[in-house]
Amino acid sequence: MKKRLAIVKGAGDLATGVGYKLVEAGYQVVMTEISEPTVVRRRVAFAEAVYEGHVTVQGVTAKLANNLAQVIRLLEEKKVIPVIIDPEATVIKDLSPMVVVDAIIAKKNIGTRIDDASLVIGIGPGFTAGVDVGVVIESNRGPDLAKIIYQGAAEPNTDIPGAVDGYTLERVLRAPAGGIFTGIRDIGDHVTAGETIGYIDGQISVEAQIAGVIRGLLRSGLRVKMGLKIGDIDPRGIVDLCYQISDKALAIGSAIVKACNDQLGELP
Image (cartoon, rainbow, N blue to C red):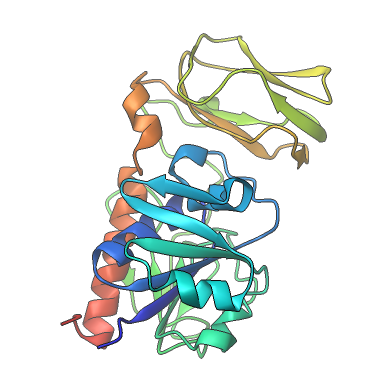
């Protein structure tokens, strides 16, 4: 029997948790991305396949597919997710999946429709279950994280990242100006408060606000807008966490598998 096909829009770190959980549950998965993803947690993001050609995260490998034929061929490989540059997600019409998950985390709906598949799921704010998607998954940290919502919307965007060891806004690195970002430190490095992590256009420094481990850092050479998230400091200082899918992403992925099983029946 052919496995169920799920298309996940986006391949950032949260989307990676979704893709990982769907593959582990026995689904075939295709992920779509833009041509220059601005992913910060690159060590645990299938989006890195866009730049590297392939990337393995916790035993599941994402491989860049250049066309539909390559997508179809890669789907035959075990624990492999084809990633295709397809900003409009036209592959949905080409492959007619049973499940579509919008994991772009744009805080708004930028083109997902409730009739894209038998089951359409949106993550976080910007979607309304029963209107533009069938199911919404709560993405805000707290008691309702990963809640499956069949009517209504997720909590509104607060623009405040989840607390880690009591730190919220301080742990996030944002571009102080627009330009080309160049990192001089790397993911997994220990840094101190005030230490320079990189530069914009080689001149404007990006500094850590707290001490900890660099858990995420934008790829060098990408053009950024002022205020864009370009890094993430983990005050816990545990290097191994840089290479593990977050508990939040896994919780959301597990909720999506449950929603699929509840709505479509469990895979044999």
